[in-house]
Length: 219
Image (tube, rainbow, N blue to C red; front, top):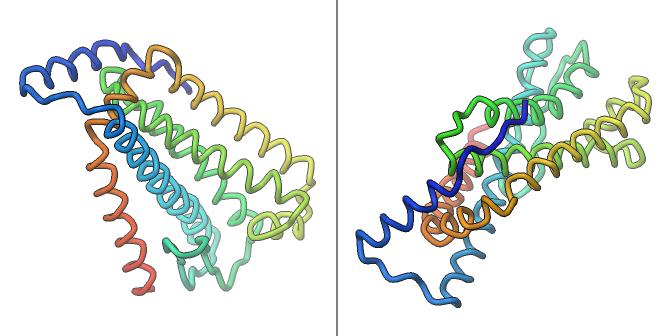
């Protein structure tokens, strides 16, 4: 399911040519460092919020499909997300659906992106890796510290070994995606993305944060 990233050097050349055409001066090192820091902070924050949303979407769909009733979906920038289901005739299915959807949906979305969309595939790879690591760590550690979904899994006879295997497999796949996305051929592309798109990343982070806050107040 994990495919290559295409040919990043072409996209890099296009970006350089575009900047030359517009006669935009390349930023100084301090400005480039600040732009890079802002880009990665905003991208990681967006990934965190969207990861929680995809995770909860798995719970919601599983609850509806198994005869449960979703009482409330909590998705906010100020707290961990959760889905309140009552009645919940199949709690184990609902509990597992969150991390499974949280891992598989971003990975499938990345795999379906065509290779010519190099920049989009890099960002999708980062997001998919983030979701895999976050969900894997959540369930893997939950085998020892049962909280949230992990507590439901253990109370309904899920072996801790299964949870640990899931956690290790998901986290390892996420790290592999990050490793491939940070390969030598992609580093220049990431550098140009950070310098030229940091404002877009911040605007996206602000918009999604506001959406999370507003949606939480409406539920």
